[in-house]
Length: 516
Image (cartoon, rainbow, N blue to C red):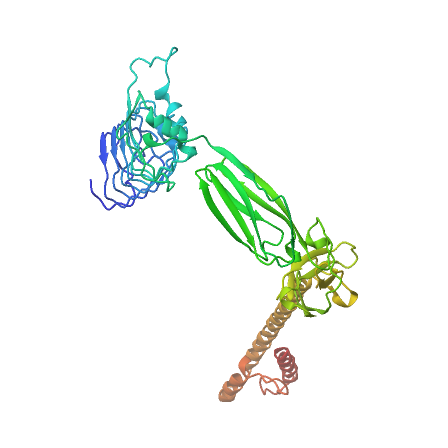
């Protein structure tokens, strides 16, 4: 059926034998997608040309009678092959025109009744021949005879992105010498890469077994004068093609040009070009090659000679230069709780080629970390420092010890500042809360006293004559809570007699409470 569903309905009848859902927005098959109402008699399931990208590992649970599953034209990149544990009778599995990239060795272990498998028009690059040779269909009886009643399996594997190098040798041998029970729908499988083999048929190939990289060089130890140009080379033989990389101590600062030349199908000539070598370039250069089989490397020692240095077999960090004059002033440019940035001003004879050494460590420690900084850089940052700790940082010319004037001593900030600020804020909040509670309590007492005085005031009204009714109403309006003054009122009413003095004192107390 054609539908715009984005998910499967939950009320699929259990007596359906065939379901066909195509050209919908369905993207996922959830757990027990077709058996939510119990046992299912489903035998044929067509889910072609949807947008399915994910299959739950239990999405086919309960479909014990399923014999045909077609899911071509979806967007599957992988299949949880254990999902077929719940479909032991499945014979036809159509997965063409998806985006499958791999086929695990145990893919067919849970498909004992399979007779047709279509994986064409996917993105498979490498498949092991063990996928088919270790499947239940290839098992034979003793003596090499096939099991009686065993059915043939038709395979459609064409139009994939086959990478025809040594890693595909086993599968190519399987395809070119295929026999029962497997039958290829299209035996003309072609290579997509590497470029030298693109477009070739499998039966035209003669692939070799894979080989761990073998790295060699004729330049084991080289000595050159300062300013000379040099190209270091290594020869790598490997199958499949390896990744070749040069490593040296100043790679993060001085990145030299690397190049590779394909000498033959399995041999690469790698070169590292170093222009106008400096003393800092002296050291060990390593050529490393790695592929899926393993890793190998070879080292080349480069020694640099100048007119004022003697021959040395060690890296430049151990060679001292005594004729370089420089003036360096060091300062702390920026400091945080756990880091510092040191900056320096240097006056040298050749600023474009002057390297600096930054010595950094705890003040009470004899061992200091050593970092090299290239020409044109006049700052260096260090992080992850301990709080409230005394450190020393010195800047000197490379290969020369630092003098006392080139050092700065500093103490990192305490890491408790923020905590102290939080505690102060908590204290302020507590004090404010106490003040608010005290003010509310005082108001409550004030209102209580006012009510008692007001009852006495009303009782006094009953003893007055009716001729003073108009004066009593004016006194009543002036005696309300809203008319109380901050200080100096004469009372809540102007009655004469013994109670007037008592009520006046009470009104003054109430006024004072309101002021507070």
